[in-house]
Length: 492
Image (cartoon, rainbow, N blue to C red; front, side):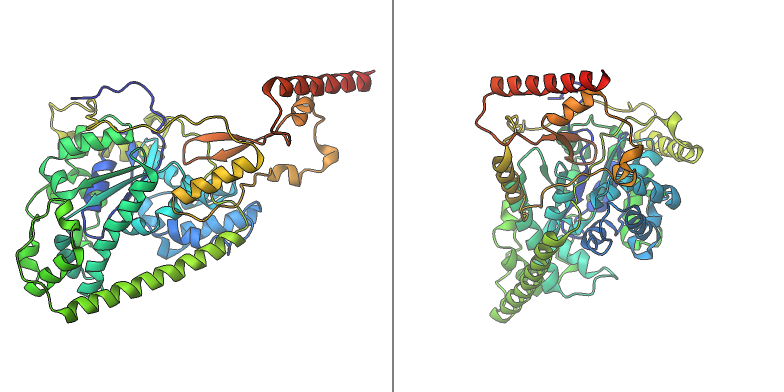
């Protein structure tokens, strides 16, 4: 049944990351999501993971010069593909310099600027390899939502082997699909249905409206009919030089389903089916009925997979070392995003927004409504409400447990210190008011980032966790009275 929107949803500003095996249809899904009236997801860039990997090289981001160096690398380095975003590099640099001192905040600022370009408030990113780096993304954006697109592994392998940029053999291609499925399973177990959603390419292209309505239900968004016709956006945003994406300009089609039967050799098909095992059947993909491959081919595949796992294990060890030496927290500390209207955008942004509206109108047809209520699909359990935040060592244990659930090493404690306070001499700072002095005696609150768009407050509990609420209240009143008395004495 259609599900009516019940007002603002706390998921509305959570980052969206699209992932899947290469050639599984992630570009098509990215265009569908970008066609939504509230969601902006750009073509692939290459600065998110590299910026995180180089975080130690930029030094302490509490220093403005270091933030500027990071921002100029993101916007100026050719390999980051920042130019595909169509943003003013100088303006983005200054916004990062003036922003919170974490690499996650810098990345969030870039994508928010991209969303503002289209008058939208929610951003996302797409890169197939994100299935290997979900833990990294969760460190920077703990409240992110992940959308995993699954396609018949044989079709993925066949398509990969035809790509001009793919320089590996069929054994690596087969291993990549199997790895994406296995990692997706583990990610689903750790994150739960509120943060992880899986859909199949074959169902998406066969019935786009139904599948996208269910996806919008997961994202907490109303379904937008323009999502079913992404070819209008594709003609504007997909470069003609990317011949492997040319079909995105022709509309949604089922013509490529099962094309592996003509595109792969018999031995490649039998090897893929043997390597995938029960994974194909679990998604409803029918076997070819070909005989099993020779033992020599299976042995070579096993060796290739082992080498890939060893390389990933070494990378994980290097990442663990970096986490213990990183100079700053990495979590995004941006405040919640506010609604951006078209009138608040720049003239260039207004023109681009008008062009997108024309493409949306042409795609959806003259009689189509702009947005209709979402079909949420099968009801998904919501997470239990969080209880009182634990104090002291209990809270630290809770943070470690959260990192373990996300498949991460325990993150170092978040540090938040005002750079402005550092730069201002104590003699020139304005004298604090009585309420400010009283607040300084009470437990401090440090803003912590839960993802691009939401800020929570972490309370540093008193050192005596065994005190009751009433005892704490009495103690705080006593502190307030002492502060008031001291103020009156100073005034006299």
